[in-house]
Length: 182
Image 1 (spheres, rainbow, N blue to C red):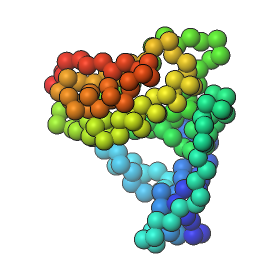
Image 2: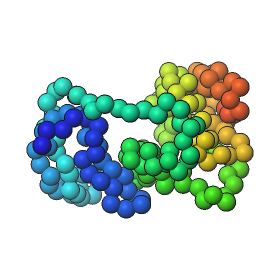
Image 3: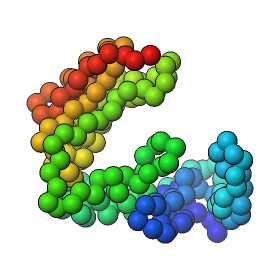
Image 4: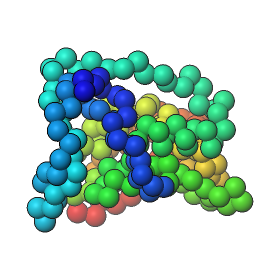
């Protein structure tokens, strides 16, 4: 089949799983076991897309006002979008954000720490996309309704700290500086 970028090409099979979406346009040329990015050399079922070089997308239907949605409806959209953590497990974000109705979340902590020395990916995002980070944190606040929200950033990221602090002004989100471990 020819696919555009964006549509679901594999459904989630359980609560702790996410749908897979076509990352670009092209032809699905195989569905087969292939080696995966794992030090063991394991194989897993893979969907192979032979790209057409066009990177054509299906229309995207954004939510104009996420606050108009109940948290359950917003969580369903997050689940359907296949949003998952970027750690090794790729844990589904909708699972992380599913809070029991009677649970009270005291503190939401956003980890702005680089995972290893000399990595600067988070720092450059904080510098260049601080407003979008704060907007994303506001979505999380809408979902889990924490009493307080903190963004922790290492003290060796002064530009990232400054950008986040400027973007967070008046939002009730506290940007906290802490000592660099490495």
